[in-house]
Length: 165
Image 1 (cartoon, helix red, strand yellow):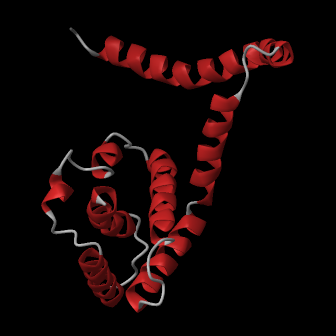
Image 2 (cartoon, rainbow, N blue to C red; image 1 turned 60 degrees about the vertical axis):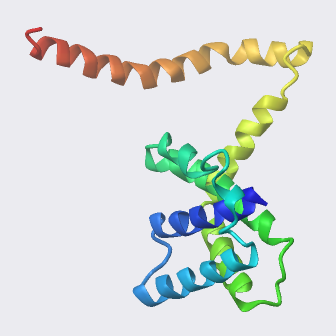
C-alpha cells in the first residue's frame, strides 16, 4: 500500500515535468483527480513515509532528456499497472488513466529501450551460438563505444590545453 500511496505524488510530478498537462485548467483538474486518488488510497497514512521515496530518488540520477524518457516510460507503466486494480467507475481514476495512457504513447521510444535492456539481460551468454554471434559483433560494439568516448576524450584534451593547471 505504501508503494501505491506515495507514488501518487510522483504521478503528478511526472505528468507536469513532461509537459503533458497543457494548460492551467488541466493541471488543476489533474491535481484534483490525484487528490481524490490519494483519498482512495488513504495516502496520509503514516507508513507512506517509511523507506523514503520510491520514484523521485531514481529520477534525480537520470539527467539527460532521452534517459528520462526511458525511466519515465517505466514509471508510467507501473502507475498504469497500479490503476488496473482500482475502481474504474470513478471519474478521477479514468481521467488519470487516460492521461497516463497518452503519456505512455508519447514515450513509446523509452518503452522500446526498456524492452531492449530487458532482452539483453535474458541473453544466455553460456550458449555457444550466442557466444559466436557476440564475438562476431565485438569489434562493431567497441567501435561504437569508441565513437561515444572519443568525443569525451576530445573535450577533455581541449580543456587540458586551455587549462594552465
